[in-house]
Image (cartoon, rainbow, N blue to C red):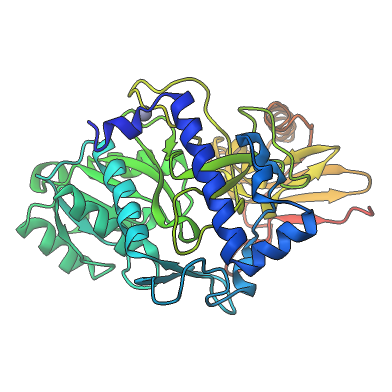
Length: 430
Ligand SMILES: [Zn+2]
């Protein structure tokens, strides 16, 4: 099912021709109206007419997280202040937020992309869409709301309300689709179970869009199982409109990134150079159609890769793999880029391994992974421990291309962090 079949299936040559025209237009506009980019272009000796091909995007300056903060609140605006109709800010971190302004056309375009994304998963105007994300400055609630309305769903803006109220609305209005945080989806499954409600039998719920928090494939499977629904991965960020940047289609095999609106690059976060096609790196996005705040080469800090080959759905927009980490977390060990999440995935796939681990770097690039054994299910026999250590080291070497030393330690022996766990201890003398 398509919302905008012509755009979604546009041939690559036509898509790329349109991208180049939009990129050139965007560069011209910021060169005329945004002092931040004017200064950057001047220092690079760059003129808008230097952008002659899509590969020339690499001549443009990056825009970093800190650039958005430094130009808070309206320093990156490319239109007069009376043009924008909506403000959103980024969530999270301390200090001043990142402020993003949108014109009416920007909002409409963002809603279009959400509409495409929803229809791509099989949503129709018959659906009842319960939006459990918070509304307000955060883009997750409102942008999804506008897109679902555009499709013609009945939208219930329940927000992150109590589970009793979510359930009441869900039952009374026969909700079929929900937008929900992964952690809350799991909690809600438990809540239903306590009430003796079998979602397969008692609810009309059949799909969920899950995002805003990183989660693993195992968590997706768990949510699907527990609630008897299909769960679709989505990718979005406030700097690029919020939800609807990239979304899974009905085949659930990677997220189509809407390339007629965003020009994508995957770079090595340390060097800024493109990685070979299909390799992991940092996603960098340039807005192609945004009016109020065009952004060139935004460093998302999200690590992903492009999936090879066409998707059976027939869409020409390329697919991103699930986000596997943040570039801030990247380690370089013996010249190889390693993400702690890669190590975690290998460890957590093993039932005899507990959840607590620490990655230690010392000397000249010696990598040690210290990990707790599961509380139950292991006899502690010295030979068994050695065999398991060897097995894990081999598994990690296959994933990382670097062979770590693995130390198994008893359950409960590693320190427990309050809040975000400190997983990496770097004692290298570099
Ligand atoms: Zn597809």
